[in-house]
Amino acid sequence: MAQKPFILNVYDISWWHFLGIGAHHSGVEVHGTEYAYGGSGTYEIVPRDSENLGRQFKFKESLHIGFTDFTDEDVKSIVESMSSDYRGDKYHLINRNCNHFCNDLSNVLCGRKIPSWVNRLASMSNYFRNKLASRAK
Image 1 (cartoon, rainbow, N blue to C red):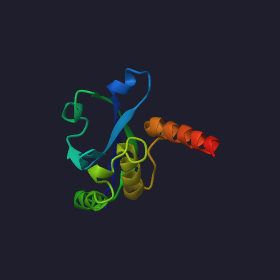
Image 2 (image 1 turned 45 degrees about the vertical axis):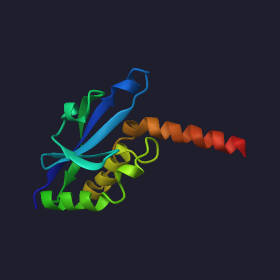
Image 3 (image 1 turned 135 degrees about the horizontal axis):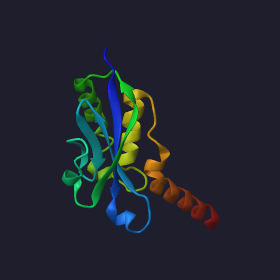
Image 4 (image 1 turned 90 degrees about the horizontal axis):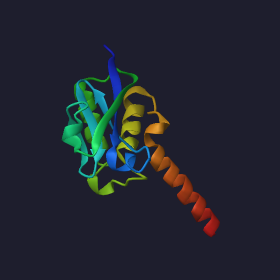
């Protein structure tokens, strides 16, 4: 079976970037389709089409994560099965965002995690929230 490139497309979110905080949206590109997650649930877009995402998104870079042996139909089926866990009403900026979805999909399709810096804002927020909670006890 032919291996296909597994790409992570990363976008800057301008309203966070303006504040000096590196916040990113990401989508997984495989077989010429980009899969992502947001407030409406999982969805497909044309790869690197930041205009379709909204004016606050600016394409930053594409990262080659690895390769996958899954066919286009397999990928669509896997994303569909993940959609029940990644519903729009379950979206949370810190605990369950687009980068979490991409990391989970990356683990399934190519056995690798996405770079941690992509979801740094959420990770830092969780860290400080946990620190504050432990001090309150």
